[in-house]
Image 1 (cartoon, rainbow, N blue to C red):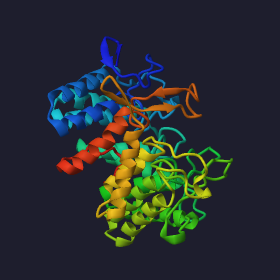
Image 2: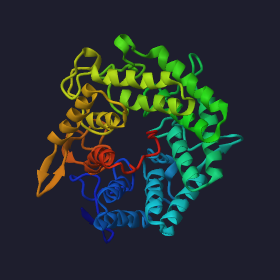
Image 3: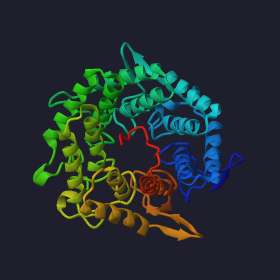
Image 4: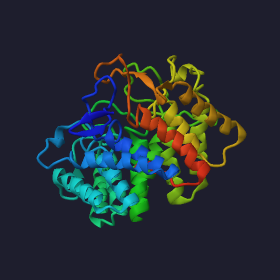
Length: 407
């Protein structure tokens, strides 16, 4: 931890101690949720105090209507500073009943509404369509906040987001979306494409019972089926189009693989009760198990490089999915345990603390350097949440679910 503006708080990474965000993916909001879950599992007030300190830091750094948020990368993503920090404050309010946190979340929601681009019955916060950084992700937060805070106006905004996404879709085969409306690439898996947008539309149907959203979600499935690899009972969606030389034709994790795509099919099962969607979820699992993870890829379909460890692309996200799968057989249970043990084996103990050193990805600042992240995607709070999910299943306690988690 470092002292920032008079508070003891976590930097995003140890090699840049002055860089502190309030985001869910990399920063304080995600770390808050880790300590809040740790408190739920242990009933240790010191962990609730850590979460409270994080919440207080967020309250003193709330997004403002005067900020240039429209041009900020992931500006209104649930994983970013705006929606992500509001999610954390709402969860604090749910746990503590302290109205200060609800007020802070309401302030952020006012900022979100302020920056909305409205045109007739559509809405947007930019050209992004996806769950990770675009309209589907913002819509998922609005659904969560509307349902949790009993705010029908936020549900209405989420509906406008759904109608906007339907109007933006490519309707050549079913429905599909580019990551960004003006972009070149189509990345069809969960974080950037049809699987994630379809999930949001299915959540909209669950919330509103309006068939337009279920029909659109099923059309997203039509598209995914048209491009899926289904040999030997697997269900794998290609990494993306056009392929500029990505190292894997297929991936495994939350972002670009079956661990994320399965969320869409679990949600379709929830809203329709049709067992074929549970079978599809299982086909996603078989696709993962065919990959060779956590060892080297078993076939050229998954490239030649080692699988990543993190909770966005790699082993952590796959292990989390295995924990969510119900009625596992012995082989699947052993696979789950192997994945969790792999995560633990890559940790480093320093002064009775666990951390996970990682080489920075090519899309990051200081790419290629080794650092230790603290956040949900690549760092200690994310790996900690994985271990807490396993503990919550043993204890039968409620696990805090993020806005794109159907389990």
